[in-house]
Image 1 (spheres, one colour):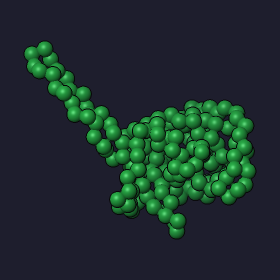
Image 2 (cartoon, helix red, strand yellow; image 1 turned 90 degrees about the vertical axis):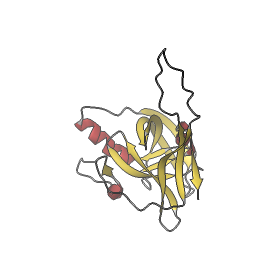
Image 3 (tube, rainbow, N blue to C red; image 1 turned 90 degrees about the horizontal axis):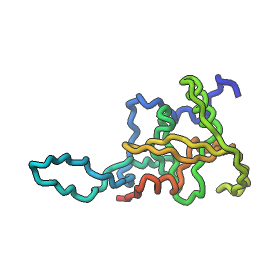
Image 4 (cartoon, rainbow, N blue to C red; image 1 turned 180 degrees about the vertical axis):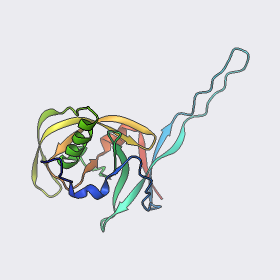
Length: 179
């Protein structure tokens, strides 16, 4: 692959600085409980008991396509912002080789490298084709105010740039609310 190659889904990418906001359906949101800000106390005043964490918006789920699949705005490696498919029935969090290649190019421009580990995993895709996954990488992902480094399998199937499964959502301790 040459550095001039743009993935076909490039229209779904945008740099972190973009201010475009897509239409958000009122049907679903992603919520998380975050602890309140700590209150400082001194010896001359009573301590303050903070209330239990309340639910806060982590992100809006966007409906796309005829099947109304849910997508979530996510920032990858603090560089690229895209809409990832949320599939709570998927067994693995997957990233397309095209997206991973683009992240490698961006990292190289910043004198960084994205490390991968070899793996050998045969999986059955939703289309009943067997897919061999050979690499896994720790990828920095940001959803709303929260960030995590998560193990993501690099997939030769380029159907979706990023497919989020429930394991990632569980790391954020969030839940999906439907109106």
